Image (cartoon, rainbow, N blue to C red):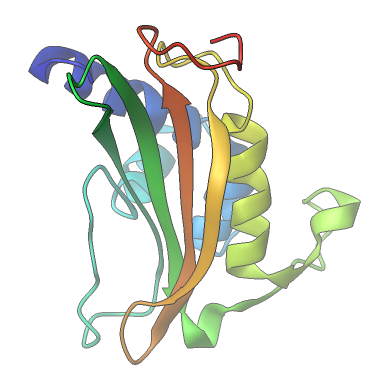
Length: 172
């Protein structure tokens, strides 16, 4: 696992990757975004992406959120081998679960569906089998539905990559 500074850098890079995905940000804000680089848009989306485990208060306004964090798990006797993981919670208020973008501003195949399923699709496009984050080749190993509280539902995704000191057969 990374040291403190590297951990911060990884999280910032992951955040920037999420913020640069227009379709994902549209799902988070429940609105069409004309310019994904606009600082007001970026600041609004950042309110919905947390670099730590987060559960919204049920009394707050309805919303859609992504929470993520990094983890490391030691394996074996001497803890020489370890696996690094990247976990996501994708969740939305039950009243925002159904998506129907009829304005034609989203890709044809993603115009309608369940919001967290569409977010899952984009997260996997960004992270699964990806080497861009300095962690190694990320691989989705777990995808579970979650009830966060009485009105927020979603998915838990967990990507994992063995540390470079690992001697597994994945070529990593």
